[in-house]
Image (tube, rainbow, N blue to C red; front, side):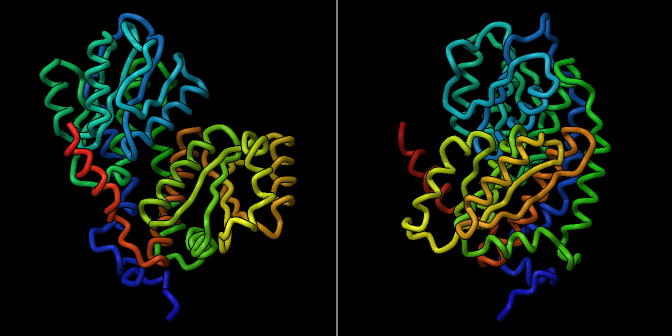
Length: 352
């Protein structure tokens, strides 16, 4: 029987915990996160930090990539997104470290918190509670406390917006037009929700179903968002996907495609993330690369909408969330379930 992606009951048949509803409510989550951030006084900085670190794992770290892109574009300091138990040796006095753990109990982030404290860096925490909140408040560090109870990957607004607002307040990045970005999310939702039958997110999900998926970003921040698409397809849809970015992929991965037919993969399918600002040379790269892959992998192009970088990043990310929820339905998967990760955490908890 064909799956009806135009019917809400059909789309949510394997979604008892309501991931569809969380994706649908993302614009409101971002607005709530901004209100929370506006109610917290960021830390006083005596000098411009030499380095800004955003430390976290999984969904809690996803916002760090966005912040890095904002700094790469017009920031006043270098940024490191840290996904590990420790920090590089060069992080220390005069640096600013954001410890981001949605649960507040992520063991890697708790470890980084202790390392950052020993290093003398200024610490800011974003969390819903747990040990991170307890330790940070006891030590007198600024804490942005967000609502709990969600899967970390569904809490991107809560984990991202406070960090962006804090960096803006500290004059590390320019003023952001949050309202324009949130309004763009609302327009994206109207175009991609289940009631919209002429829906490009559904078409892409159907294109990807049954394939090994490649998500390519067309340079810069689009490569970072390609990685978010990958993780959402992995976790929500239980769908194996890989991400890469131009121009780097044209220096290695493009050659790997020569032997793709011998790797026992039934079908490859791709998505290219772009925004229309690419140079003629970059567009030529895509044209030639896709011609070389003709007959092996067909790409759907998704173009970001929006005036500001924040607006385009959020829009392109949100589009991927919708693709993942439709693909989860096509794959007959509960988008909230992450049994392998839960098993891994249980086993690691037994290790001292």
